[in-house]
Length: 278
Ligand SMILES: Cc1cc2nc3c(=O)[nH]c(=O)nc-3n(C[C@H](O)[C@H](O)[C@H](O)COP(=O)(O)OP(=O)(O)OC[C@H]3O[C@@H](n4cnc5c(N)ncnc54)[C@H](O)[C@@H]3O)c2cc1C
Image 1 (cartoon, helix red, strand yellow):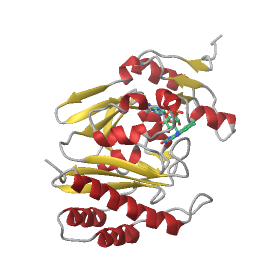
Image 2 (tube, protein in one colour):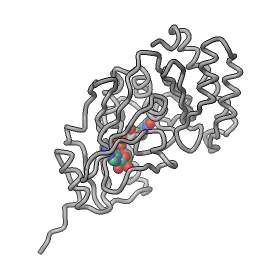
Image 3 (cartoon, protein in one colour):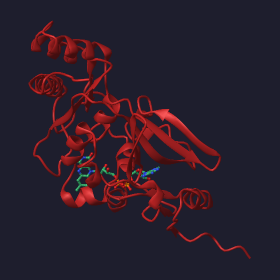
């Protein structure tokens, strides 16, 4: 007689984790559990089993390679607060509380796929690539386009997010958010800036159903930095591009205004810092 696979798996390597997932149809992957556990508690998610990534050491850590940072999917947010990327540091430092940051992982933030999650604007502005691994091998997909709707991604059945690759840059990068309070509250809106290809690249949280960026906004931001446009021009470009949600936390109009303010704030910080750098 075949015994059913135990409900809970604690694999130690990526292949073991993939095999454990294949053995448990309907199982939920758990990294830090800071999304999964509240979801189970509030009964907004069901699970036919669990595959914990906690003991998969190969998925944790930050490495610098040729021109990019390779961040293992289960690297805790606490480790990102000292990552060699200023934008990532800023976004990680304002995520949750010290306790949450110790457990929460970059992979869980990405796969949660909610437009207000802290790390997502920085990954979008920075041109991140995701490494997705299945039993048949790995594929690299751009982060831009990976999130298709709130809570939905291009991750296939049986696939794991194994790493996030962020191109290195020597220029300015930062992140800022507005919320009802500084800790333990989701961002009402957020924004990240990264200097790329000689210009400013901005991305926003809660500006649309998915993390959002626009060439028009980047053109206006770069023009403001070069003294060719005003702060009002950048705010107008942001207001025209975004389509923010309306909910009990804030109106769409408030968000549209606040997103413009955050864009100007980040470009001003870049200017004070000496421009976009290399
Ligand atoms: C009190 C509190 C405060 C919070 N504050 C913030 C905040 O300020 N900003 C913010 O952005 N978030 C916040 N969060 C949400 C949460 O902490 C983050 O989104 C965190 O990064 C999730 O990571 P995790 O490892 O805990 O995810 P988990 O709960 O383990 O997983 C989240 C989702 O991702 C999937 N998953 C995880 N890893 C992988 C992988 N490698 N491959 C495939 N699927 C995977 C899981 O199956 C699940 O669907 C808060 C949470 C709490 C409880």
